[in-house]
Length: 328
Image 1 (tube, rainbow, N blue to C red):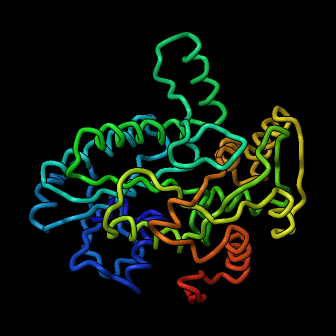
Image 2: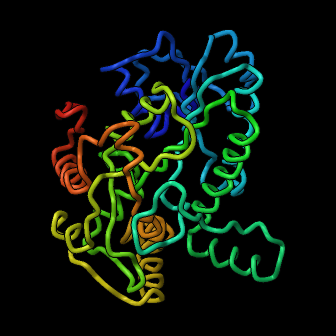
Image 3: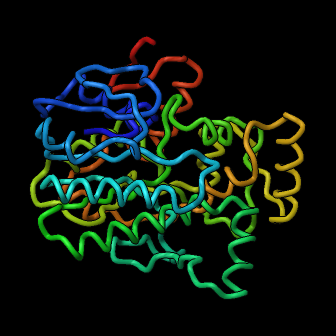
């Protein structure tokens, strides 16, 4: 089963399955119809309103790629609640594998690339004046997407510890790019200026959406996988390299000035992204990928190649799929 099949990750997985399908039956669930169905049997429904356990048993589902997420205006805990519902149904139906994508956001910033056992950021769960103040600041700055990933991972880790029969795999992706993949990230990279603050990290990892889909399918099918795996381009590229590839000007300003300028330009329609979208791009942490390479192999594209291809896709209007450009 693929939940959230109409989203960019779900549709990328379907595109991959059109070329290489290891499954005998695929069920896709979403509240809105997908553009591409391919070999998928589609169920239009709210994930919370389905009897997932019965669907798992009736269709002999053995693995789930859980790409569904709550709408942007939902409470932060909604994604964790969705994951908990899928976990409970998976356990009751005796599923063998559950794959739930996460992000590099969950790691604390470090001087060196983070392996999978590195320290994670702290949740805002403590009911103290300091925690409430930090949460209000995070909401204003657009950091609550990070909090949602942290809460979801806490649910997954608790399930991993409590149930050895269900293998939960958590691919922690870096920023995933590709034509039409993430409109807000596309808007940030398409801007005439790249806005960066002095405290921004200086090196970034990127992953093409085609590689992301291939790794999701591998996470659902490879034997012996369990726990977190960092999924990212093998190379980390600098801000200057990003600006050079995109032929953009790098505009460094104090954090308060970037926040004020981006917010003002977004409100008057000059920019198609807000300060929170910029924060989410800058909040990623470089990750060590040794575990990924050993268990899953390397991405076909490096970070530098992924960005260069994103630029070509934007200009040509043709997506890059499995090593070739495909017409729309």
